[in-house]
Image 1 (cartoon, rainbow, N blue to C red):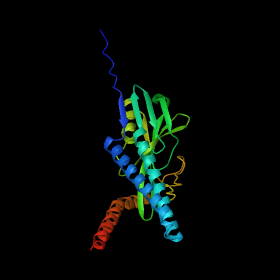
Image 2: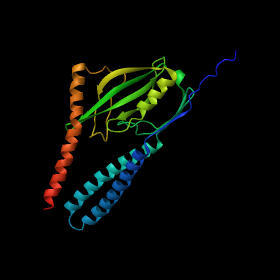
Image 3: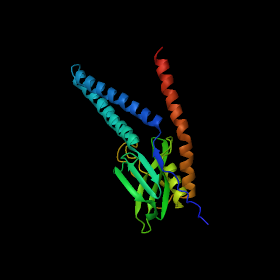
Amino acid sequence: MTPAPVSIPPPQVFRAPLAARIGVSACAVFISALALFLILAAGASFTIGAAFGLFMALIAAIMTALAALVVKEAVSRWRLYARLEGGRLTALLPLRRGFIEQKRVGVDIAVSDYDHIETRLEVFSALGVTTAQRAYALVKPNGERFFLGADREMLTPFFEKLVNAIVSRTGLKVADLGMVDGDPGFLLVARQSVPDWSSASLSEAEIEVRNRRRARTPQILIAIALTVTLARALGGH
């Protein structure tokens, strides 16, 4: 009797959504152009007065730093790539694959070398706004971790889909380590950090508090947007 052929899943390729890549690239171009305009305006403003010139230079510096961050985000979105074929994971993991910058790495690894996958929710709070990201790491039998990346709230999940595909193909188990507080640094723009993966999870009561704060964040952002829109409308009359 001829044995039944073994079904081999076709390769799977993972990229950030095209619309998201184009959108953040357009933002990067716009903010970079605005930063350049402010730099030129700051140079010209010193002819009006030193104090005004310094003020404009400060605004230009802030906008330039923001432009650099958005450009880095755009480049990372275009570079982010993963391919599952057989039992191997080939990936290009850029600097920005979560709120915390990582080393840019290219990997070609056998998923069978890993014992399980760990995930946890990392929460950040700044200026009354709370957001989170779900982080994922492959773990070897000796405990060595390989950090894949983190899906930030309000962005299309990438690593969740990748991990689900790995689990489907290999049967690796996913260990949920709960929730931890991250340090937002300066408004999640600079010097942000998260605890080591060995850190204990928050208690159930603390998790409930963080989740309530996260649920309020979209309402806060909408309220801010409406306030700004109303102020501009009233100011135009």
